[in-house]
Length: 199
Image 1: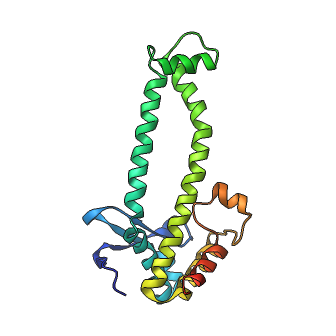
Image 2 (image 1 turned 120 degrees about the horizontal axis):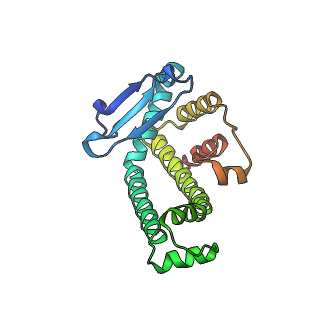
């Protein structure tokens, strides 16, 4: 399997000291990029399954997911702090509107922080739903990359089955539950997508 990823960037993590769950993840940028495979994953998987999981993690790098998430995270944080500054500015128009909306007469940075937190909660929920949908799209793309580069969608599917069972995850939960809460697609959807990637 030729993915252009240095083997020195692949590490085994002693996940068994904290959990029995099998997992793997990609982290870092530039020369610091690394893939960690939990020892529990290695113990429970055969070589083709491990290659599938490894190719999936490399897929996140090759598809640019890490950089995209980093940029969006930085922008989101910057916007939140900018709005927080407006909400806690005693002489600002935004803070006056905010305080009036809550029936608070005297503008105070401390109260502004509380009011901003109240407003931020539903916005965060909505952004979380959008972020989960984006994350699920990335997982499908990484799966497709892994199937293409290994030429073996079956082994990746078997690895996903094992991890789903290991995590006690529902293989096909209600669509609304997936839409609201799931950062990864359910097993059945991933297997169907892997099968479609062949055609």
